[in-house]
Length: 158
View 1 (cartoon, one colour):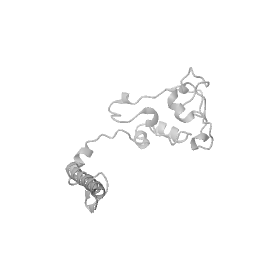
View 2: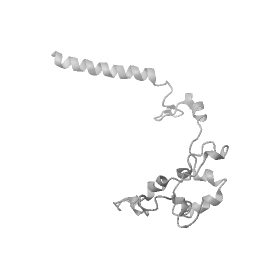
View 3: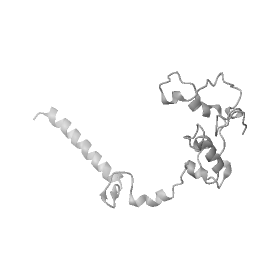
View 4: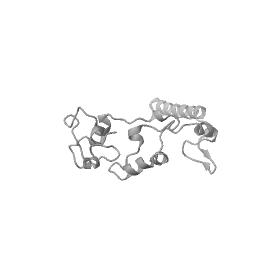
């Protein structure tokens, strides 16, 4: 065969060999090994302790419910029922050990993420009541007039 066939073939074989050698060097020997044989995924028996030491940053509303049942029940009966507590209060990492880590985010931008009026009503979010934040009382925080746990109740202050 001519050189124009062999040269590209050698390059391809060299790249394949380089990938296999690199994989052998970089991928741990127990990667993908499970109790039932080879398994796809990120589990490695040699790093189980590393994962046990990882702190959970985000919790669920059920975690918040343990200490705040009245707030949990209030929001679960409101239009905001599907919103997780941490969307507004931030991650529950180190809470309740340090109660100051959770704050109420009063920025208008937080509410505008969902309540900015969309021009295309076919979106699922188009069904949410929207406002124009530039014209709808731009000098006030939303929580001045709207109670976030149940926005149907107006005139509440936090």
